[in-house]
Amino acid sequence: MKPFRIFLFGLSVFIILTLLSVFLSDHYVIFKLFTLKIPSFERILTNPKPAYKDISHILKLSDLMKDSILPKKDKLPGKHIGSEKKQFIDSARRLNADSIRALIRAIDFPAGNDSLLNPFFKDLSNLPLDKKLIRIMHYGDSQIEGDRITSYIRNQLQLRFGGLGIGLFPVVSINPASSSYVFDLSNNWSRFSPVQNSIESQTGNKFGALINYSRIDQPSNFFGKTNELDAWIDLKRANISFSQAQKFQQCRVFYGFNKAPMMVEVKQDQTIFDAEIVPSSAGLKVLRWKFPNPIHNLSISFKTTESPNIYGIALDALEGIAVDNVALRGSAGLEFTRIDLNFLRQFYQLLNVKLLILQFGINVVPNVIENYTFYENSFLRQIEAVKKACPFLSIIVIGVSDVSRNGENGYESYPNITKIRDAQKRAAFASGCAFWDMYEAMGGHNSMPSWVYATPPLAQKDFVHLNSLGAKIIGEMFYRSFIQEYEKYLDSKNKISSE
Image (cartoon, rainbow, N blue to C red):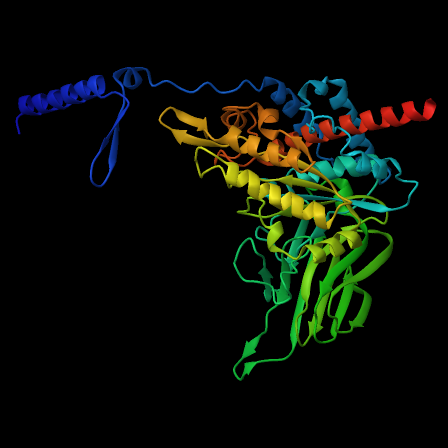
């Protein structure tokens, strides 16, 4: 083909596209197999970009936190073991001194009911005189996976109110990577949960506080299945974890429904600490080991002929506060009505759970529709069911975070974020719960790209999940909002006592 003809062909294509953009700008042309959107001529020339949120105030917090929040190893000789804790507290005080109050997004309450958290605050204020261990369970979707967000909140609360350890965790996690502990386990464990599969528990949906349990698989050999089951789990501290999470004073194994006796052996630094034969059971049971001094590592092995349900392992202090990370990948927070709530109440009472934090929403976002009343009602049923079964609980709902998708102008917030957030808030208020708006705390509309493109980045490039630094920042912002309400409670309590 001659060059002149190639030029004429290119020119004709350009003229046709230009005319289409003028007369059919921003219209959809529907064909049998596909849909074509014609961009406007102005859009082609200017390629407008969405306006991202100014998060300079959050970046100042990032600069303060990235070097001071993680406890550093003490390289100076002669320092005592508590030097890491002192350094962390000093860093937290410096954050206060740098006007971090401006970052606080206040916790919201239903009209005329701003004392919803007072029962929990009363338990907090009685520490350490009560010599008890009280518990917070932080439920959420993959936004909190790997102990992100939770680990920071836990460390701050434990530094203020006492406590050690990472709390309650499952034997088998969907994502075994954790910023707080290193898990190593034998390869013959299976996980059962209403979130990841539709299989129902053989014990009447008794999934427990973690909404899952683990079982030891039946091994096979050349002659068929054997009767001996042997499994183990090793727990080691993570060097990147906060200092309070790296040690614990007690270990508890929550198990049940073992139809055969079971040998359980506990080792600490390869030395047998305890070994005992556990009889068969028909309900929820607890094995407990207390250690004379806080320890870092532990191994637990199980031998039996028929597996029990292992509902979780808890590494805690003997008193203070424990905070559990319960990440339910793929969940919208609608699983509570699918489990045995009487069994859940029994579990919570054994753990002495006083506060739930419910943080869901990112799995609802991709389903863009006009009305989220169905989600509001479904989420409301979950909270009401838990509160009916466990009326002793205080509950805080953390709203959906900002989530972005790649559109014709670049990454922009999904158009339904505020609708989902509002549905969650209405459900929280209708059920008598507090609400913390994470979407607005991040900066609101189009804030996620600002977190992703920040230096250093505060979120992952999927424009959905926070990274470790961003999770710490959100953890700090929530913690400050929480402590602000606690200080109000103390002021009110002191005012009443002085009258």
